[in-house]
Amino acid sequence: MQVREEVQRLLQVHKDEEVSITVTGHSLGASLATLNAVDMVADGINVPPAYSKQSSCPVTAILFASPRVGYGGFKAAIASFPDLRALSVRNEFDPVPSLPMIGYEEGTATEVLCINTTKSQCLRKFSIDLFRFWKDHHNLEVYLHGIAGYQGASKEFRLVVNRNVALLNKWADLLKDEHLAPANWWVAQNKCMVRGVDGHWKFDDYEDDQLSG
Image (cartoon, rainbow, N blue to C red; front, side, top):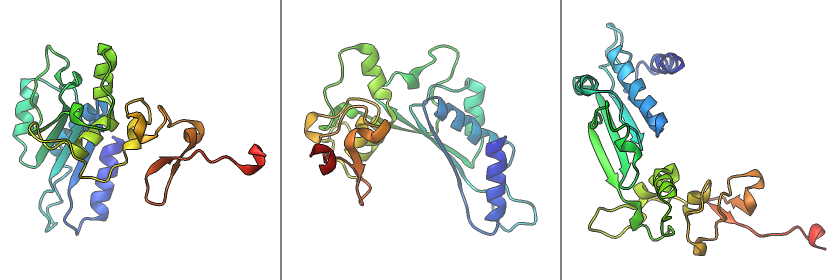
């Protein structure tokens, strides 16, 4: 209800402009984003009042590592809405987009972007522990890193988006040592990680002279 009310408020504020609605989420949040997007289109929230000169606005769901949502009827419903688009981003070795395996329909998204982050030169070799292997491939920062650099199955991984690789270690230990980012640094005082004027996080081992003296 809060999402609907806020979207309606914003559409009213921008009623004389050409607008679009985008919802996004990761994992369970991606499932909720799907339901929100479908709900808005099904209830006509994206359709302006009759007196408006604007046409209905497109609704797009961008879904990272989304589990399956709905059954065959839900998939057909999504396909029936011309204003609705859903992009599902999947990491090759992340099992979550294939779950639940029974009772839910695969392919509710209108488009799928598959990435393979094992091709990245920045990441350590993924753990041989199967649970951790899956967990690492499900990590949102790994997904965003993959989108920034994955060029396809037949090409080398190459970062074309200026996304700070230190973010990969915010809640994990994924980066090779040469990148100088402590593991799990997104904590109190951020383990000497400081944000520069360029927006990038870097390791700073500066010690206060008063303390070291």
